[in-house]
Length: 72
Image (cartoon, rainbow, N blue to C red; front, side):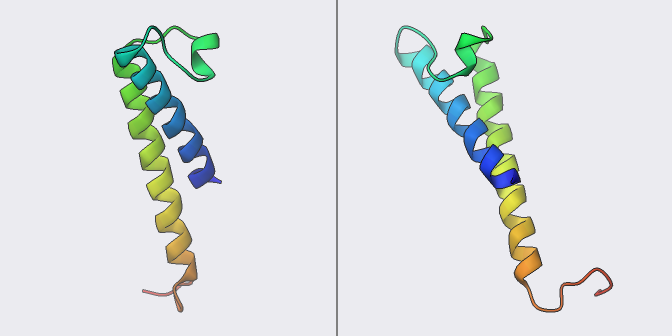
């Protein structure tokens, strides 16, 4: 679930940054509700990447054999 939310947040941040920087206004769903500066869209993109990476690392950790709760 973290990976999916991270992907959505990352896309919203990228669309907002690209639209606001290179075109007439931010794209995506967030500009309909909030008016954010360009730096906030970059922070949203970074937060999305972090959530996506966290979800992938957690998923890989669960797939490893012998990676149970009591394993050192």
